Length: 439
Image 1 (cartoon, helix red, strand yellow):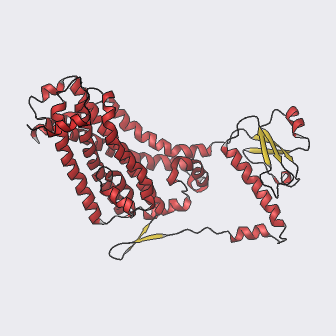
Image 2 (image 1 turned 180 degrees about the vertical axis):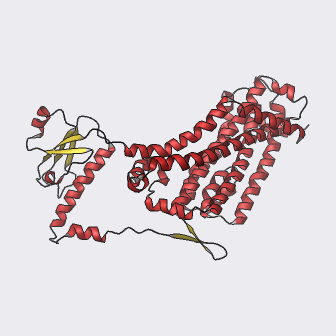
Image 3 (image 1 turned 60 degrees about the vertical axis):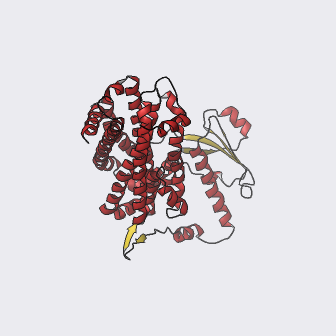
């Protein structure tokens, strides 16, 4: 590790002293905590100006039972729609309810002076639907039917336990497992490409400035490449650990301070507003948050963290070796686009397959994609929160790091030739020739 260690130290010191490293290390946790706090603050803001809607109810059933709320205000009118359009231009719009709305629920129209939002459409539809349903229930002539329905309404909170190999039981949460699987897999994907591309750009910059020609006079290309890969890996781990500490510290102080009673009072509004953004992570309620507190034992989170570090390092080393080979084969970032495509496809495929794996973490698709080294960092992290047999973990990690060792040898062959090639953009066939060269 003599010369390689010197290169590792150089890469680490050069990058951690950059202003961009300091800014991203500090600002990224602030941004993430801000994203956690922003929905809570938004939910506490007062509603926008109330929208007034004129209701023309030809059925005579719905309008009297439409109650104004914080966002919408209803004013029944008996005049025709054409007359109202001429007289009332200061309102949000006109809601026209057909005479046969009890039998034809599609006979409802909204005419507005501005494009209606999805929330307005949903609120109007749900309010009208409740009134129509109540009117239909009256036909059954059951006294206190709404109260009866409210009393029999039941929500079941399911407690889940995983039986381990020794027959013991451990409480687990499917929501928590899904969140951890999604976040850890996605973070692996982002970090591998972020720091892998950093290796490629570093090689291209040094090659274009002819620095490599001086460096290889005293160090072998293989040692130079390994030093650069491991040096940037140490930068990545340092930055990640700082992020973890800052996020936990800021999140532990800022979120409870800002949230207050929001988790108890505003959870349903938050989950509804965030559902589109969170995708598979939506649907979190107060019971789920309580389950988090029960199942997030330190041992479980420790295994997830260790697994993340192991697969992050393995995935980074594997892809960094390939990115280093690409960087040594081209003269600028533009020329690298063609060669990057075959490298990026497996990780993009892993990100797509990850969603299916979270629904069936023990299936054949999950198993094989968690064994293939190019996809295992993302897929195995998507499976890990659900529990993975120890032998599968050992096999997956062994294949990953063995592939890294083999890829370093291949990349070293390309690196040895590529760093001295200028003015030529090689194709895949040319790279294969470089690999077969004997020295």
